[in-house]
Image 1: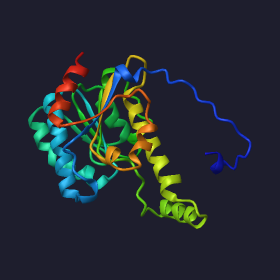
Image 2: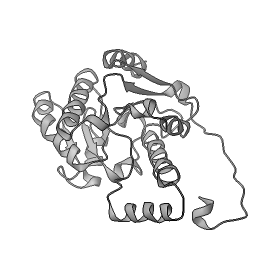
Image 3: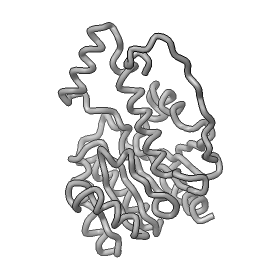
Image 4: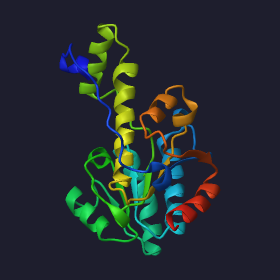
Length: 238
């Protein structure tokens, strides 16, 4: 950040986090999660849909699902729409179910809606208390390197001899993941669980750096989905 702002004389100060993540939050990675590099949109959408459906079946609470791709979001919506409707669950989706404000209002006043969001839903969403206690991140939030502005930024850094992934892509993705966790824990009394359906968080070399961006005492666990479901019931209903 100092380099981006052109600062040469500066000091950092770290302030303590007021929230008790060790007691009030959990991060889970399903062991069955498919490899992102080997998955096509159809296969990945099918996997996400199956996880959300199982969560909705076992947890009678609202679920926020964050995407990095609108194409995948739409695919998951049309896979789940009829199934959840038949089970009495409202499914809301960015770009399909109305404006962001309208969807958030409906979601906040519902006790068991499922909301599929991308882009701005990763930050600036305030759903404290019982309004949100279960969050699913479908994929690590790296920017699309093919977007013109992103590509131009990466090219500029590489021309300067600065590795774009290490100095730009990775820190931004780590920060966005931290912001996603911030949708869950908004006060000292909030309690919630985060499921990340991307095993690169624990298999890729850069995963450790992303984990370091999260609160130090946040419990992180990889386990079969069935075991996660069992622990969620105990943790969220405690």
